[in-house]
Length: 54
Image (cartoon, rainbow, N blue to C red; front, side, top):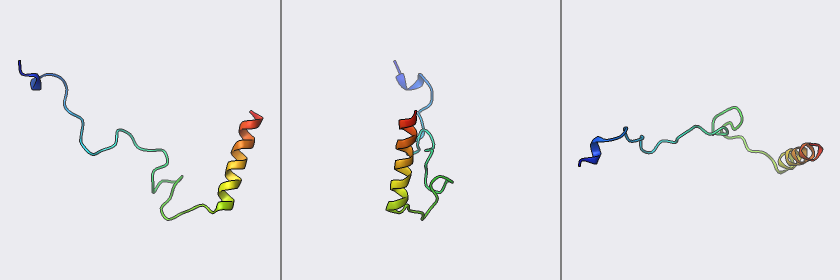
């Protein structure tokens, strides 16, 4: 039996299954923008406070 004639086509090679929500070059993660340590800590504290409040 020739199994190569069954089933659907093979998926494309070397391409992602989906696009990432924080991919480089998007609004959330523009090129050549890097957070400072202070900005990162402020964002983490805000997220922890929001999670703590429920």
